[in-house]
Image (cartoon, rainbow, N blue to C red; front, side, top):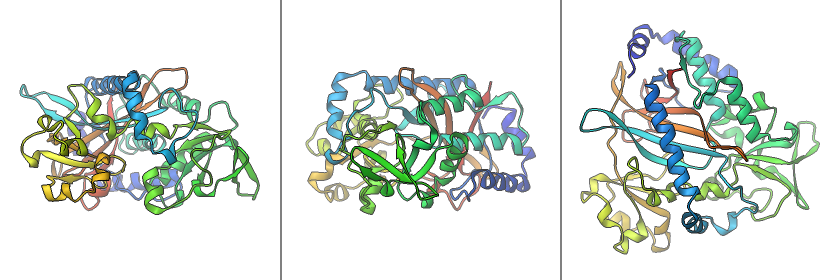
Length: 404
């Protein structure tokens, strides 16, 4: 895509430069980047990026501005994880698109999924910058959306993550963070914003306040939490946080946990937009509702669990037996979705490769929903996540660059 940048990059690529990219990423993040880093960034037309940015805002506003959807989505929040004092809007949004070829030969974005949860905003800025530096890319290319540059981008993140607090009292809370593949991202925030990364199970509650233990053994009050803990992982690993989510604590949330449930795969059946493939809750499908919206061929249908990350649990072409094996009480937690066949658009030494583009938004209190940056996942198999492409080359996590 976007010549001459694509052709020039491929012609100048060397394994030595890629090795240097990996070394610089490990050094800058103070750890080893464990997920696969793609050899190349992706070059997209500015118009296509702007189209996806607009679509993500339109989709989100369809949900947030709908009293009916907000009433319905209240039921998506498990009672044991319902946090008081919900923010009026999600502070973070991610909207994933694949590209399909239309009848007139143009490329058009199609929604994969959306989630009101922070992605790797810190690492992604670093990755794009290192691509540009290591490969000597033209200065006319940028990776910041919404008119941002590096300074305004980090000012926006600081405004939402740290707020008006001393960074010493702001923590990034995650499940066993030292073992997460996203640890490089956490370290970028630590270095850029001065906040601490803490294990959510090691927080301590005293009255209505939370505390974390610093490197000197002092217990420091937490006044704002940058939430990165996924409930699915807490449940799967049977981990108990150092507090009850239902507690009315003297703590602010950067990324209020309730929004993780409100805007997720759960939202897909309620969206009405040309970019959205058909989707039906599994329990409603069994009840005979919504079947007409899906393709007749089972090979054109996906089964997705509502609350999982990195493609866990997605099943292609599910059989009647596999659907019936899901307990009746759990069927509302699954979605049947129309499968979309994405166009391979990135020219690589291993052939044309698919790209899934994630537009990442920040929505400060009292402000507007802003596209800030994007990430790209490149793959040549059924699944686009980096975990599913680890044994291939010119696939994995990448960045989108486009003309200023």
